[in-house]
Amino acid sequence: VTRLPSLGAFLGRRNATLLIGMPHELKDKVIDILHENCRQRIEFIAVPLESAPMPMPAPTPVTVGGATVFSLEVEYFEEF
Image (cartoon, rainbow, N blue to C red; front, side):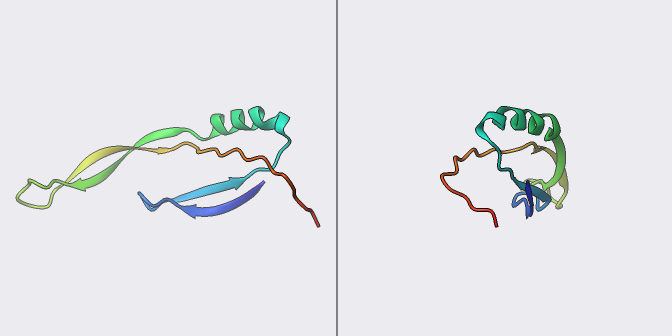
């Protein structure tokens, strides 16, 4: 497993990007582990009300967290 630090563009929060190499037979098990540990949740961000006479932020719910999984077959790799 290789962990790469990353930054989310929408909320500007830190994320982790994982590169996980595994045999095809372990794919379902790895996805199950990610599913158990990468939960989505609701957080609130302050969004200014456009029609308000004074700039007054309104709490707006957004879904954060979770995981996005890309599965790629590797034709060739080297270790040295």
